Image 1 (spheres, rainbow, N blue to C red):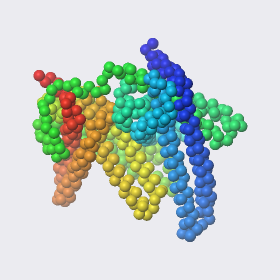
Image 2: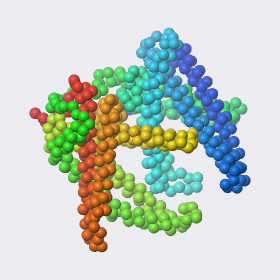
Image 3: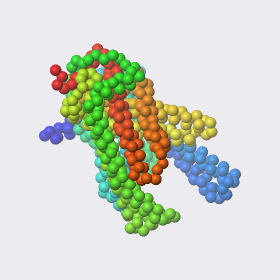
Image 4: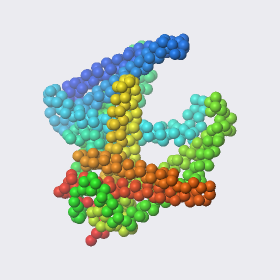
Length: 620
């Protein structure tokens, strides 16, 4: 019976959602009618303008082979073709942005109506009061919608990246897709539905709760859905199944006269999917209230319930760096143990590169040179092509194993160094046994937070590449240089901020027991308010220090005396590469120490009255 409980609870949510809609029919109609009209207008605008531009582009393209290269006709045809491509790109961007904004505005309005009705609010709410309520919530939902879109895009690129090795290990045939690819696609989509539960609920949170939006809303939603995630997944899956049934039904009846026209069919499908989406958010609004009721007596942040600690003075930027050196020296024994683990893992990877990776890479390069130059790879000798493909698969497999191993080592080292540094700074220096016992379980939270930050980083990178594309299409000459410069400045600022946020979130997920993933990232954004620039400057300084390490050792290698003695050359290389690897490992530990102290400063600043860091286990 316990297995059926989430299904029963989901059925109750759907039943309550259906009952809510007729109670405020006037407001529901006020949402649906303008939204459907705007959706239809933009769809028709996109359909007719895109088809017209596409026909014009094909016509201009047909003139290019008839013109001699370098002639005036050829240049004009290329210029007009580029203009058509730019216009098509602009039309696509405008329509997508319009759909996104209309959808979020409609979702905001529907969630507001559902929340009012579910809370026992008056059904006689005037249109003016309702419009003011929606306008106030629009800013929050738009910001949260931007972050959820960013996470969705990051997940898409992450899935594509992880699919690359799978494509290399699969054998394709004409009209045949391997079952491994199909199962991977199904798993990726189910995981997307599972993750989107938090993303959808975060938009509901940002609409209902004032001053909660963006990453903070995502963190709040991640905390609320705890214990109810199965219901959210079943609810989302139910709407996916409903959409598939409706789409397949339209495909069956498309043969009728009223749906033969592609434009009418597209118009009907777009508006129906929009209405299903609105109903889904009504269901998630009911789920939100169920989650609130479930977590009434469960505090969101238990971090303030701690023991007494040694009072520490407030530190500024260079004070944090100075104190980081002192704490590192004071906490020397645990940090030396972590340094040994990091350095050993680096040495193992270097040895594996020499013994495993380099022979495969050399064989891969040699076989690639034997492939035909003027033909496709599939026209080559089958035995040669299979050997080439086998080496490529081995390279992908080795890279995946090596990166996974290094990631686990770095996350464990981060958890151990942050935990021991925090205790050394606020309580006492831990022994190795205390550090290892305290690190147990913390590295998993750090790994979860890092995965979410990878998704955000991948989506941010894709967004800035998209902005470069827009700048290249919409501007030329000096205007293009100005736009590219602005995008690059914003890109570097975003890069350093994300690095700072990643480190800060990782520290939070290690120190605070209840926070990981989106909740840790949400807490990091709140703590860094007013301190964001200081975090960026710390990141820049650490990056400069990181860049100086290979620069110094490259200079030392260039000044080393030249010799024909092979053994002496190996000794010189080892004398430079070993200290370089050691310096890099020390830099990693120092960066975690710096951000642990930065976290302490931000926490003290925000909750000076109630903040009590974790005391060491066994402190008497």
